[in-house]
Image 1 (cartoon, rainbow, N blue to C red):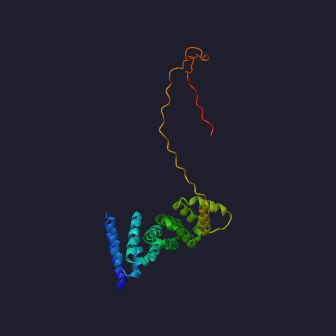
Image 2 (cartoon, rainbow, N blue to C red; image 1 turned 90 degrees about the vertical axis):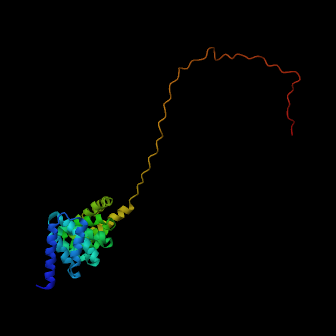
Image 3 (spheres, rainbow, N blue to C red; image 1 turned 120 degrees about the vertical axis):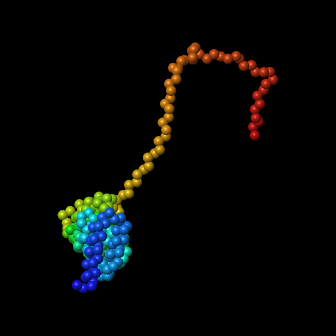
Length: 256
């Protein structure tokens, strides 16, 4: 057996022992565990070793293992993460979406590349990959869906559906774009582009603020019934006569 092969076998055995003997291990310690194991292999062996570490786990434990392995690989050698995602996706297809989404969170601008690599390695997981990566990095959602649809053309419809679930605001426009393309062979890339145009052209509805309601006022209280004054209101009683005092004269202003 070659030294490199023996070294890899020892590491895998050690990893299996630690994985099954520390079921209650804390997450930070588990991540350090994967970093220690992956740092001990040569750069060219990093993808294969990452895939083997994930495959060693069983059932629900594979999810946390995938996250820990991809995070460790991202710290050790960021340039090798694309190959790590591909290796994990080929070895354990159900973990393709987890591997791609974790890698995308660490390096968002390469989200489309991680999703495309995972989809090529596990094409039956294409829609799950789009949903997971688009949810992890929403700003790259459309680029992710386009890349996966181009890599796996037969998954166009599930990919569009996954994009809509990850971006609810875009869902109505995706539906409209698909209706417009009915009875025609149109790629997912075209549908996504059309949905973007429809969304950009849609009027922006502004909700008017509700007017502030003043406090309710007290209703007027009923007073006593109106009673007419005594006497005839049409009869005017004359007052005392007015006498002009002697010597009183009116003064008029002279014309100017």
